[in-house]
Length: 70
Image (cartoon, rainbow, N blue to C red; front, side, top):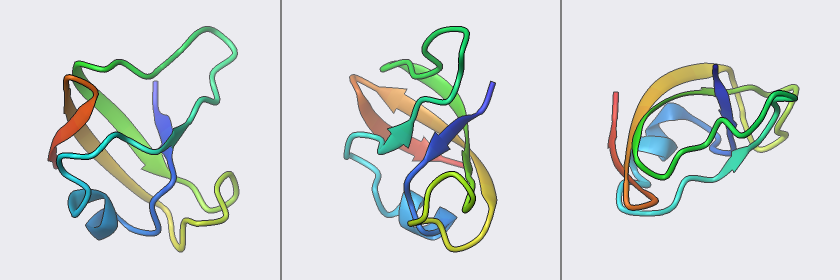
């Protein structure tokens, strides 16, 4: 599953390491967000108006904060 995030770009997401993830739950089948582990995320302009262009990333979460973005 892919979690939608509220960042204007992947660069802005990478600059947010150490902060909580700003996201939008879009799944009808339960929460996609997990406070620990890897998440696949997408910046989707048609879902979040703060996103300038579409992007995808993998985010490592530790204790509810962004630890790494690839």
